[in-house]
Length: 170
Image (cartoon, rainbow, N blue to C red; front, side):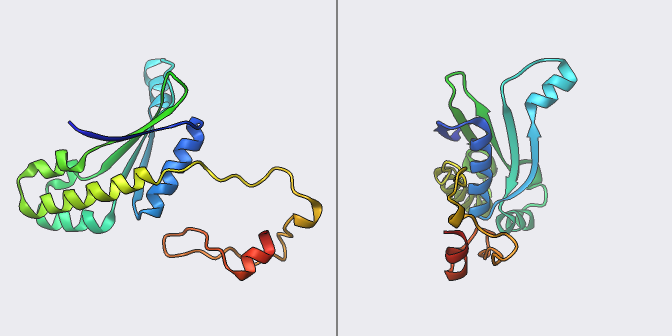
């Protein structure tokens, strides 16, 4: 099976947050989060490195695929794996949708798999370090949370900088 992967040099938790944000920015729905480290500890009594599976889909593509083949659901989700590596980095990977959904030999599903591959590759490529709010602000820069306007968001739920936000938070 072929995989799409990316290595990042950030903490596991930051990589997990950055991966979720990249998925959301690229209109993926996160349907489940499976912490294999906790599962191995609970069910096997084993200590394991941080390893989380994010079950995701693009709802628009999922609906099209299910309309074309109502049994496609067993291979429809993109399971992204975020795992700690021995060298301290974090690997993010997903099975190539063209190797799973595309193997059905159904013309419409192959087209959907190609589009999904492009979208998931874009999401992986867009994984960036988490932006953290500065720990120390000068008193005059501290936002007054009671009077600050609500943060505007675009359709994807990402914060949008506008005049009111800039004045309140910059």
